[in-house]
Length: 493
Ligand code: BG6
Image (cartoon, rainbow, N blue to C red):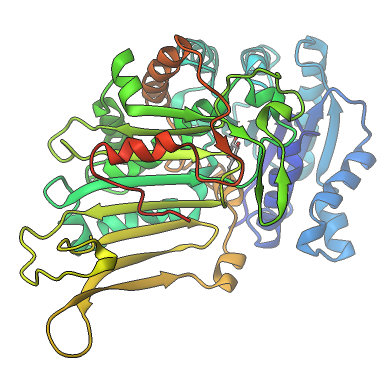
């Protein structure tokens, strides 16, 4: 159904707007969710004209192969305003333009403000939206915010106070783009629509859970940002803890925004808060050295642009979270993420416990003796999407030798290629006012509390970096972390 709305994008000339937002808006346009009654105001400091802005917008959707007319028609909905976020006069211009477009396109007073810029400006922007009368009385006013949401608990709390002075929680949509990914959303369906899994989803049957977010890319041109963030804040505080909460939460009473959020928050509250010594035992970090993969040479992190020569920032984290509740007591949730690893791969392995006795007592070299291979449910988030289950079956022939077999389901490339992109889904959710796939303040707050403790403990010591070669699955300590508990990474490319 067509949605009427005015999008105001702060940071309209930025990378995110160009790579993600404009193409996603175009996809929504192609599908009819946006049609006649929408307009976009892009703001940033540069003095661009509407024409130039529209040309840029058309350039960002080229890969989606629009016809010339389509591209023209779509981009004609875009308006540019050169804007200094600290200058009150500029907000008056923004109000004027917003009101004019509202009337021209019959937008019913629906406004979606998208903050795709550094968080230090959020407070100023929202205050001005209110004081200069840019919020409407007739339709809705919603705020969509990009990460990072603060750089620790205190700054996030302050930021939250500022925006909550203007927008109520239900009108704030904090983006975690992983929550828009198909297979992350599928976690809940795999769990709650399959009795065979949900009945076993606890510490009686699950030995450990492993979450890997590996990236083949380095920091690219984001050295400036990354030097203040590192893998812990860049990936663990948001994406990984969201995934942990989806995997570990209790079954919500209904699949609604409110119930889901209540359950996710309970998990985050139950994650063990480590003291300094526990951090040292349960979390390890790494930074990539130069390395070679498939005949390609990669530079060390310290040699990347805008990175200090003696940087101690981590480009890799592995750790063990414990969730102190009835369902998860004693089940490690292992996580790892890093840049310049062997390949891009996001996957979750649910490793089930062994059967109490191996009645086959089989002795095969590949399984290391009498132990049976463990049942593992693997959820493939990307680049392929699907899930697989490793079981044991009988080897054909004489006797009763078990051998591993795998039930494997992968979505075809055609299906994944045509499925909506994360940002497209999240934008549509925001238009529909559905906060299910966004991070709420209490989730963000708990995540920062957990991550702050790790960061603080790490800041007490100087790591011996670099400690893994580009193109590998991280430093040795990430393997030792599991070996200490007689576990190992199920995925070892
Ligand atoms: C972002 C991080 O949130 O997620 C990046 O800032 C990271 O450093 C990216 O590369 C990974 O996202 P995706 O969708 O490519 O897996």
